[in-house]
Length: 404
Image (tube, rainbow, N blue to C red; front, side, top):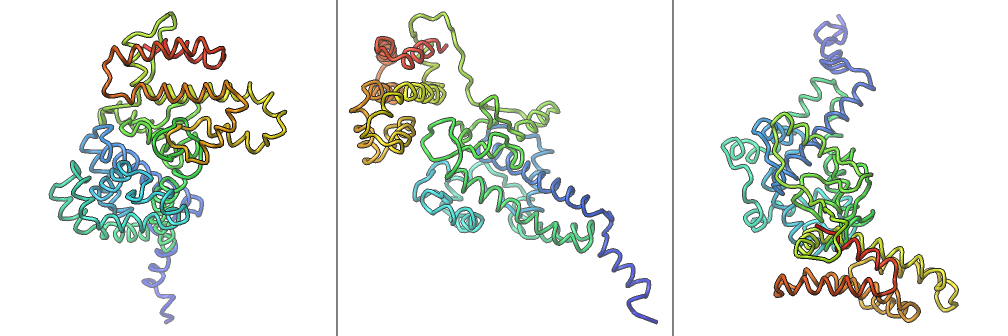
């Protein structure tokens, strides 16, 4: 009797070929995408928004499901992830940032982001300083942390049981998914390339306006501007899938949102800035500066018509100057400041726009001033803006004093 043709061996070969589910190739692809997407949801909702930033409270059912799922699919320890991420925000894009492409290089973070995480997880000072409030129950101490590698081994066995020998490939994709999407794309590209709605203090960018593949984490500039917001989208054309899941959990009473980014309100008939205006301007300062940057772009377009005819000003110089005009002045390097000085020799209007931006930002940076003093400075700023003769600046001032 042929050993291979025996019934027990055939049964084993059939099992390895089809697994328990006997899925087609396309069904396996779809199943893999579903499994990896659950992992993405667990990272963005549980690890990121709930644990690291406390932007929402989770009911024990989804909270423990996500914790268990992450143990299976990533071997990630909650305290380590939350600690490293909190340190990333506290030391963002400095030498102490655990994974900044601005200091370590984009190739290092993109291709070795997971290794940077593992190295920082061994830093006891980071764990002690930033790991407060993370799970410390019996199952965390005796299973999820003590045997963090056991989960991924169990996941491999489950994948093989469900899909057969091809389950090894499914498992491999699951193991690579977070190192590529979170550690590589978000931590790497999200601090290197993309668009910025807000000129926050670090280099964070929005990678793509539709946050679907990585659960909304693509909107990284929005997140770094409003770190404790449970919602990552801020513009009408942006979509945060993770926020959609949170709203579903909230409807089911399995989650409670604690904080979202402030939405500015306006009183269009307001003629003079008052204390309510001052308070709203300070609370919505990122929105204020984003709108001011838009006004700068309008002013630059108006000035461009006569600047482009000046022989001493090259098109490349004007293009780079336009970008510098929209950045926070304090972040500019000496050579960039000198470039703007050269530009201002040809445009008094752009020099005024730049200087007025510096003065506007100083209003909420003067912590020693009283509310009445700050209000007087805001009113004076609006009066000078409206008397400047620069339409973009005048229109912005009218909007500014209508904050309520």
